[in-house]
Length: 376
Image 1 (tube, one colour):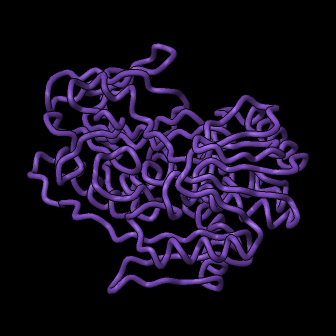
Image 2 (spheres, rainbow, N blue to C red):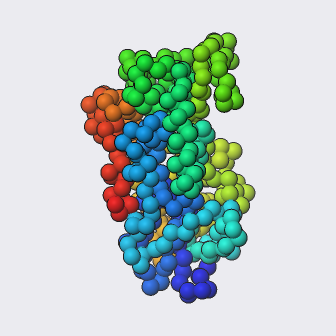
Image 3 (cartoon, helix red, strand yellow):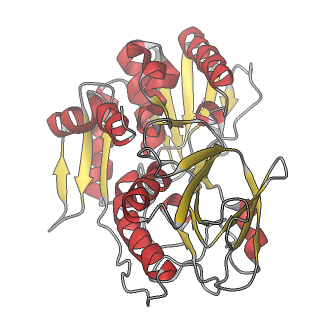
């Protein structure tokens, strides 16, 4: 559907996290701006660089709120697109392959001829960042105070985020008690080899992190002192319990596109071209896609290449040709600024240690690269 107000055809990207922002940047260089109007819709006027989330929440170290919260005012070239701050609540398709409209929370409707969905994931607890800057800064202040005052922090979830939280806490408060409760017998999940899961546990234990594995814990009301796991393990002095289990794909509104678009896991069904089956011209990328791979920011670049190529093919009425064939697992888990572990899913599977984790991620959390990608 063309925009009746401007006469141009809108290509709309919903979501401007790792995947969405990269899709928009690439499209801005490829679309003919005399014919197509690129519109990026995002709930926040800034990107929160989530790779810095744990460190930014735990303490005011390096004042990361000033560098890891990056405005969107520079990431699209002048005249090559615009950012609309708002929440999409529904998608109204005119007809299959004929475009439609996205409906915003305030009732505004934005027509599109092609649509990219890249709405990422939502988190609970400390990483449930507010959308407004003032609220975000208040959120950070409150959580930093909680971490500082706590005597024994219990982290529910031994995935990458939970492990990173433990490392950041120990970095600023080496004597503070930190325990991770994880449902599996080893950290992370079985997508990764045991040698890596054992290695990151060993490194975290060396920093004083304790573990309760193969058990679960319900997050109690704030202010609770003392908790007991489902198997009866008591942590009597626990005075701050935080959830760090897996995020939930932010795809609920996408179900308005039609039945069977969103799975029971809240992911979006896609075909090999990362197009939503039965809805030509609607594509998805990032954490929300229903694809058998670990959700990692490093995979976004491969999603982006496929989606951008196929959006261009679609609007030019050409067959879609670029297929997504998966991405190797690459994960780096820093334990603060000075160590950590990682796994690169190439060849036989490469395990890397403190120097690699520190140099590539732990030292600056890749903030400079994120800022550069958004024009800063």
